[in-house]
Amino acid sequence: MCVCSGSVTWWKYSISRSWGCRSLMLDPACSPMGKGGKGKRCNRSILHSHFANSTLELRRGEFRIDRLNSVEDTKGNNGDRGELIVTNLRLIWLCHKSKKTNLSIGYNCVISINIRTTDSRLKGKTQALFVLTKFNGSRFEFVFTNLVKNSPRLFTTVQAVFRAYDTSKLYRDLKLRGAIIKEKQLVMLPKEQTYNKVNGVWNLSADQGNLGTFFITNIRLVWHANLAENFNVSIPYLQLKSVKIRESKFGAALVLETTPRCGGYILGFRLDPAERMQEVFKEISSLHQVYSMNPMFGIDFSVEEKPPSLHELKVPRKMDDVEIVDEEDAGDAFAAYYADESKTGDREPVFHEGLGLCIEQLRDDYSVDQLWSVL
Image (cartoon, rainbow, N blue to C red):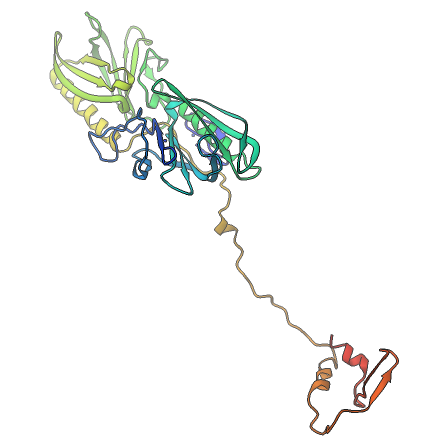
């Protein structure tokens, strides 16, 4: 079962986007940096055709959770068998006939996941997974059918991972005025570590400024006003575009710019003295670079009870330890079939009442019963 950080239970794992010779990519992943490294951000909102297999490779922070080898894309490729790969960021479907026929669906595009009845060319009328998505103002529906008989694995796996993704948005999305501070302390996320708590930080969003506190963690930056805990902001490093120190009407300020996807906010903060602000700037920049190399998206899994593999189920071939013991005198009956050196011709036929046949006369030391005991 799988339990995701967002805490869901399924299959016996624990967890705590191309089309046809056409290809469709919907919000493939959300790594702050692409595979190429710094400066190459992944596209979360792109529609492609003829999607290259290299783009379907997992990127930093993305990992495979499950792989189903016999799944049909009933909506767009009805009758074609393929494999469905479930990662912590998306669903990837690859056609067995041609890898150019594929799908990559990011969970950020998913509106709902349901189980309904559909007509499959390979399985007939059956239950299937309906995935409704929205991309660039248009809606897309995908239907996946598990071709393995009596297996609910497709439904439980995808629904559990998506539920975990949907309930762990604080890892990936900017949050304003959230319930993230309790009694002046940050409400920690799973696997989150606080590296620094900085007091006396002015938020320059208003003309007069607001005095508050900075929490610097391995996942995000959090600021809250000292006089009102609900006046706060949580900025994941994933959405942090740049960190700079530049002049403002309040003097030198620490400026955080977020990505256009989360609104393109420019947030200014001031710390005194200037040396202290430089230290905070270096710490945030360093943590941002470290996070970009190995991002944490809030979904994790561990194996609790995994079905045994085919290799584990194979039983080695063993030779039967059987010894065949002949009955007494039974082995001597074979001698009746050996060539008799003293025999110069066939014996006279005689009628045997038990068999109802004429047979060659037997030697004196053998009987018909002894010959039958050989069989």
